[in-house]
Length: 266
Image (cartoon, rainbow, N blue to C red; front, side, top):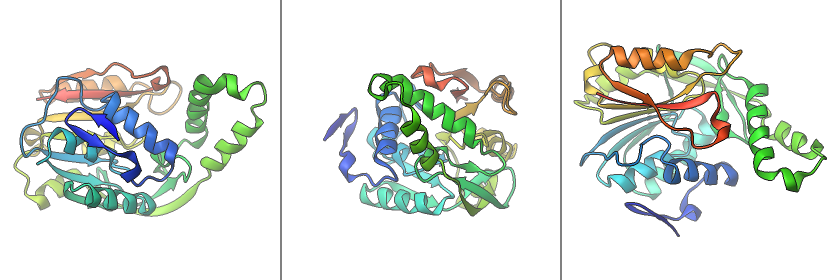
């Protein structure tokens, strides 16, 4: 049993895709509070939208912070969605999971799913398999260089297997379409972690719905030499222009270069 502020979580009771991912998500979300800065609280009966929910670790975190919260979780990839729905049900999270991604349009697209690193899966148009594999390789080397020694062939073989590409057709919906259908009168926190599709999610919010959203936590990809370069400043300006007080949260580790969390409050 792992002690957590506001409650307990037994990782053995969390259904995951890969054990290393489940542990990583727990450390990132519960221990490092990557999406919700220390001292930040949620109101009673909070309404939370989770874009890029994966297996639902953030929803479980929200429940420990606010047991009465309603969490609406969006996860388009079928193998991951199944784990998400079972986790929400098993841990009594109020709300619902939806088997589609959020974007700036309603429609369908193709996703690239990585069975060994499901959290890196992305829309085909945003997938960067070589870049993400290199990113994970650096993290592994930083933590386990002594154990691996000079023979990195096994590591590269393992990562090639983990990052094999499996394609899935998946539906997309605009966030404003969802807000209208749910008849939400407020959104206390919008969390976005969608592997380089964050701009599309933000663009899918109509002017009339922005005043309903009180806080935004968004992972922003700003990777030098790629199409995302300069995006961090773009997102900060866009949120500032909407009247939010937006800032970049401190990096939780050196491996977060090119991937930062922007937290904004109205």
